[in-house]
Amino acid sequence: MVEAGKTSKWLTENGFDHEFIGLDASGVELIKVEPELLIPFATALQAYGFNCLQCQGAYDVGPGDQLVSFYHLIKVSDNVVKPDEVRLKVFLPREDPRVPSVFWIWKGADWQERESYDMYGIVYEGHPNLKRLLMPEDWVGYPLRKDYIAHDFYELQDAY
Image 1 (spheres, rainbow, N blue to C red):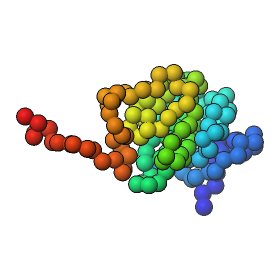
Image 2: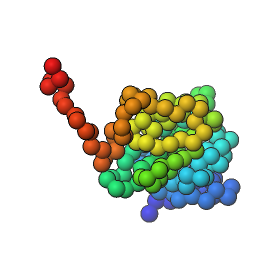
Image 3: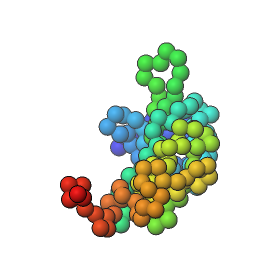
Image 4: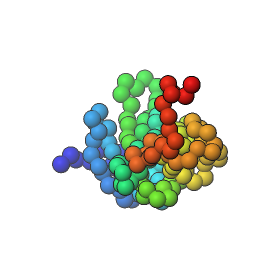
């Protein structure tokens, strides 16, 4: 078992109950956060110095399983060779996946949350402009879900 990292320990010391999942392949801490606690966690981490949302995305654990919204946070400052990093993961039910938007904490979440909404159907509550980004507005379904079936799909070479 891997010992919790310094960010996880800091969260625990400050009363933020969470599950330390381990380290990713790069040695970055992975922390599981409940959807309703994302904003308090994100606000605390931003105050702790994680001033940059490097990446927000989503993935499908598997057909019929949960969806995950993840957040890769880093501490950006002058003359730092290797900034502190942490990844938050929020596991969501496949039916009606909803999580608060972190747009109001990190403005860089804007298009990233829109892409996760467009491809996986995760609703980011409080997002100022949550609409499709890559697919047409009238597109049915979420193309990156593992159980997605494209209806009336045809290959491009057969289109002429």
